[in-house]
Image (tube, rainbow, N blue to C red; front, side, top):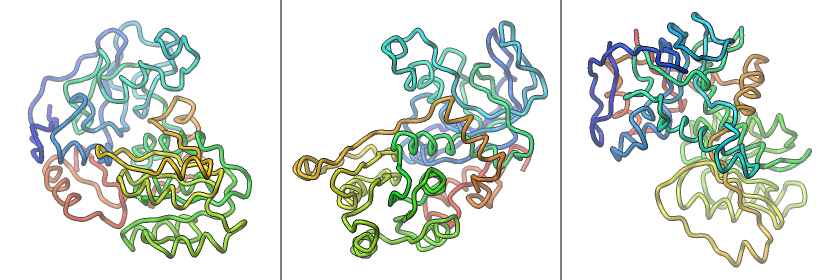
Length: 345
């Protein structure tokens, strides 16, 4: 069968690999969609992956084979998304009471667990740990289902922030996760939401999805915040851009006593003023990945059509156009942030 693998920086190769077989505790999934995510593009640019299975980790498909010793609720033909299992209850983090960042879950997210495949879901089929597949609810189609993973990342970030009713929220970076964070912050009770992005098309999309305003980084955001609520700044700022200068923008936009939530990943070193954090009593929190609870919440919201994920994609590409699509995404950020891979496209 065919699979796309990252050979080195800026080189995607379509190769023939052996058909996957379900080992004990695993299932084989026929891939129907796989999102091209920001981490995939970063890996393409750098050639660096935590594991081969990381390249293509936002997927949806159907179970076509079940291995021995799988949970009894799994069955062939089931529509599933790839996510994380419940906390293992045995690793050091779980034993310490912080199962939300279970070591097993994190290893499965990045593809370093013992059942991980030698390739990601830019493929016809993939073998995965049976504990990481979750049913796609009725009424959610395959393209929307491919956004379950970033939707869960956004849900985790908003849950970490714990916004209060009536809060003013700023989201920096109107990529897939940033746009989903903006949507979910409104559902969580924020009365005013602003997005910050360099691209006018992304600003327009953010407003069409419910943001009250959108800005390029600069003084206009400060003027808008001065006219909102207490006029001291945002109650919560989500940094979803994954850029070092975005963190400084986030700290500058938050009110005294407010919170900055770090969601975007950047390999760069970011510098912020410790004096600002201290004098204004700003809380900075990281938001890494997601938990099984976040997956279930995201899927429920998608089934209820409260997460408008279909507005985030408009392109399907197959094996023949996949390498070219990475080149295109590197040249310019499209108006809609998500591109979906479909093996038969």
